[in-house]
Amino acid sequence: MQLTNLKVPAEQVSFLQAVRQGLGQQQGLFFPTLWPKLDINHLLTLPLAERSAKILSALIGDELSQEQVAAMVNHAFTFPAPLVAVNEQMHCLELFHGPTLAFKDFGGRFMAQALAVAQQQNKTTIVTATSGDTGAAVAHAFFRQPGVQVVILYPKGKISILQEKLFTTLGENITTLAVDGDFDQCQALVKQVFDNKALVSEFNINSANSINISRLFAQICYYFEAMAQVPAEKREQVVVAVPSGNFGNLTAGLIAKALGLPIKRMVAATNSNDTVPRYWQSGQWQPNATVATLSNAMDVSAPNNWPRVEALLAQGVISRSDIEAVAVDEDDTQLGMRLLAQEGYLSEPHAAIAYKALKRSLQPEEFGIFLGTAHPAKFKEQVENILGSPIALPQALAQCAAEPGLQQDIPADFAALERAIRQLVAN
Ligand SMILES: *Cc1c(COP(=O)(O)O)cnc(C)c1O
Image (cartoon, rainbow, N blue to C red; front, side, top):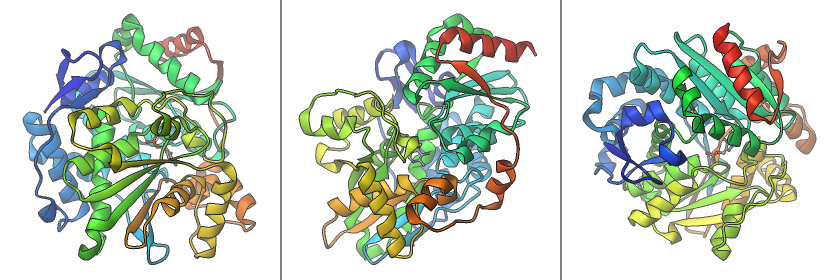
């Protein structure tokens, strides 16, 4: 499969090259221009790992053998993605049963596999920004992987304590930087690193953000897993709502649709960082300053995957009416959590936003799926405050919550980041 730089179309790379590079020239995103044909009905009869290997193999093409892809999938997708009924019409696709209790384990773990294949014996430094959950998924996926150093930037004080503890407590090859700024500033710093060609080649730097195509491809697979769990007679009525920040998750769902999965409509749900819903209404792309919300992993006002959505539209493989964009404010987020609790379903702010957006969009004959992107315990304090009842920590969280964080504080400034990278490799 050839991938094209969306900013510099003359730059064409293979899958493994795109995995290695992360971003193309002029910070362009890599993306396919042609899509494979899949036997959807057959795929929906297969178990998760076997089906995912077939989908990913079709996307990657013959650069990797089917056996290689199957082995990568078997290492990466070691946990289920159950579709849980909240009531007759609403269902949550629970994507938080991986080691760091968020959907980013799917992409992070598959990317670790892909990068190991792409880099072979070369030493690599991964520099990535996280709005909360990527950091943990990437840190755990690469922890103790030989030849790999990981540097994670996150906005200091703007992610939950448990989210933070899940990656700042690891140490060893995982360096964590608490940046005095917001997520967009962290993301901008990472982009500056990639603009610095000398630094990138000196330390063989790679990003593990959702801009890496391997993460995006991995995420396509759980939309198929959702559909496989929908009763056959309902499959033409499926509407999927995605709590969105950088819009990687939504893009993966749109790709699944473009590949022929019969998703009727995708609902892009945002919090008050509503650049996309406003754009969808007005046609004007006008990001505001990022505001902090309960759903902090979605506090992104300049979503970096949006050019890929535009590319799918331009390719004509999806159409504008396939996407509905809905913003959910803070009060409505809390209301969503309470409504779900009344239905007997314990949730957290991100999923609650998708649920609320879905509720606004869904027609009586439709089958609603909202994505549960994180385990409620990851947002223990907010969930307990809003619902007024205590929730228990799963073992993985309880363990690391008790350990000291090893992060360094840095200002939102490139020189400080460069120093940290140099220091790390010097050690
Ligand atoms: C990252 C994240 C999101 C947003 O996903 P994008 O792919 O960036 O749109 C939503 N919910 C949770 C819990 C997340 O960690």
